[in-house]
Length: 255
Image (tube, rainbow, N blue to C red; front, side):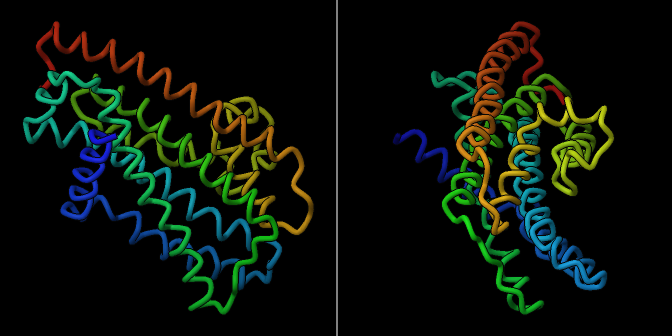
């Protein structure tokens, strides 16, 4: 626990020091304003849940991917990646702890979006199912940590994380049903989308904002956590293998 706390303090200070890490906290209110303006302009109050959730999930995912990549890329640049890999603590544990702190900070997007809705649009977001919404949001954060750690394993094996960061964000968000429910996309995308935890998260959270009863909330939450757990297990195994390979090849710090 003391190690996790120390890693958490380090990552928290790093985020506050490097303002680029906070770009999603700056971008999220602007995206929320755009979505809410579109909903108001088209007189579609029934789409309010979509406009509120999309920027939140975008912020959580984008910040996790940004941090998971920068953890590796910046540590390579600073020359500290070798020290972390050589440390007696598992590298996967260090990465996961740092990503968890970043993901927890990204949940501030919920407050940002709510503030934009109230202050600029006079709309008070209603949550008919607060328990389902809170549990679903926490499950989403945990699954995001697992997926971001898996991405970090890929970033260690590459010379730069930028290519993955730039190419992964929007395809995952689209197939994850963040902008529109998965069942509104072409049918061939459904099997792929259901392998992405965001598709389950977005559906569950939207239902939690709807007055109608939420069907199978426990099962859907379990699927989100299960997909995140599988990603985390895969990340731990892959990180171990990648670390062994870069040690053998002497390419830990190469960019």
